Image (cartoon, rainbow, N blue to C red; front, side):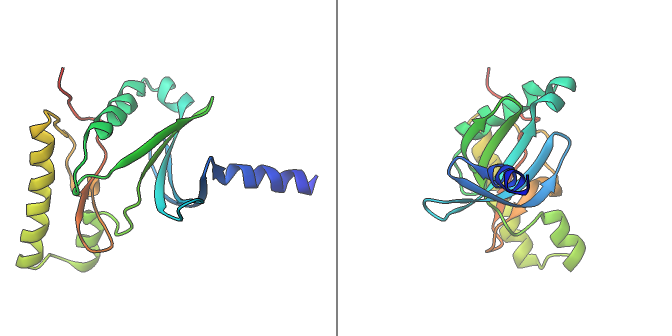
Length: 167
């Protein structure tokens, strides 16, 4: 009995070639977990979306829009989608792992940015948004909580669920 439980836990902690780790965050549709590619050792973030939640709340179009948007965007200041996997009950979005946290949390914990740091981040934000606009993608939910920082303090725009796409 214990061995069967251990196997189930181990299965739950793997997703194809990815080994799932700690929870990085939780949202309305599911959670985001740290993952490691067992072949390359590369870190990823896996957004795990519960299909019953999105169909019950009629948010499946929003998830499809986010996936479609991220597939077409390739820019250093936008979180990269690597692949999408699915099971009967869940959708797994394997994304670039951005470990520096939200810009919102950075400002709350450390206070205002220096002028130099603020200019640098603002320029990166403008670069990312300009790129989106050049692809006729409009974020429509840009806020500090949707701007992540990587380990080097570079901006990564995320959460394209409310974005507008070209027709």
